[in-house]
Amino acid sequence: MPEPGLDRRFNAFMKVVRIGDVSVHALRPEHRSWFLPKDETLESIDAALVRLLAGDASTLPSDLAEAYSVNCIAERIEYHGIAYFLYQQDILVPKALHKLIRQTVHLQGLWEISHREALAPLFGLLRARGVESIVTKGTALAYSIYDDPAMRRRGDTDLLVRRRQLQPARQALREGGWQRLTSKIGQTYQEVWRRDTGMGFTHDIDLHWNVVDSPLLQQVLDVEAMITRRQPLPALHEHAHAVDPVLGMLQGFINQTWHFNFGYEFMGRSIAGVRRLIWDMDNHLQARAFTPNQWAELQDIASLQGMAPVCRTCLYSARDRLGTPLPAHITRWLDTATQETPVSRYLSCKETQDAFWMDLAAIENPWRKAAFAMRRLFPSPDQLRERYGVTEGRAMPDLYLKRLGSLGRRLLASGR
Image (cartoon, rainbow, N blue to C red):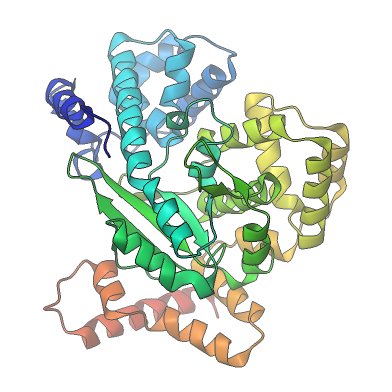
């Protein structure tokens, strides 16, 4: 049951909280494109936020506050997902910015309550059908290493099940009031389920039956190993389980590197080449909680799977930005390990079609190879409509020709 009074508090909050002349509804992407400057570098804002988050400064530089609008700085804080941390640290910032931070934190808290109430009953439904599942990524971290789950800003929950248990998992989702959405092109081993609370929030679950969508990266992290080594997550629900910390850290490194290179969706845009500070905070808190045995296992698995370069990038980013302590033998390993592997080459691809060819080469079975290629070349009609933003009235042959033409131009541009 929803928390008593939550809908009332949320509706009241939506009425009274205002950002300048724009209500808190402006937090939705379609209303906020005016926040980001199109012609200015944001590196100086990011550098100042790093110092604030690390505790090396307690206020924004005066020249920064003068050079950028409050809304611009507030949006950068939201992109990095660190409003809660800055609010806790009671930093000295302009009053208007402090107000925006406070409002964001308040909304995060309301979202977290609503998200947990929507999500938690699902674990009992899954258990009743004999489905073994694990929560991964942001929600797993929120309810394990963070003092308050609302501190870990995120937009959904990732849930992993075995492929053979996919149908009963879908039945449990439907019984829990979740509705399946059209998957995006390229999402071969996952699907999105949504639930509308009817009180201002909608919540998404990314249901996975493979750890990642990439056939090449699937060789690094195995579904069976992830589920077999699952650990209880009682802070979320008595029947909830999370990914093992070591495997979860490696999965997080892959996810962060992928988004860094290919883009992280924010406000309707894909932003690449910028590491979010919340990723560094994830890695910082996980590293501080690791035992010597976990560090040893991380080194063993990463060395075997060619993930040392990815580990180096992610761990050193947390170290350099937040002062994350790393064991001496881990830094020696990271500095001396091979810095180019199939995994690192894949995650550093400049174009998605380059990643496609590497994935195709990683599939040994010719029938599966053909099926993978066909899914990418000829996605479902619903996926095409979603991709090009058209209604059912548009002739499907036109959309398929449009997609093939786009792929052909990209292939020619890549020189393949």
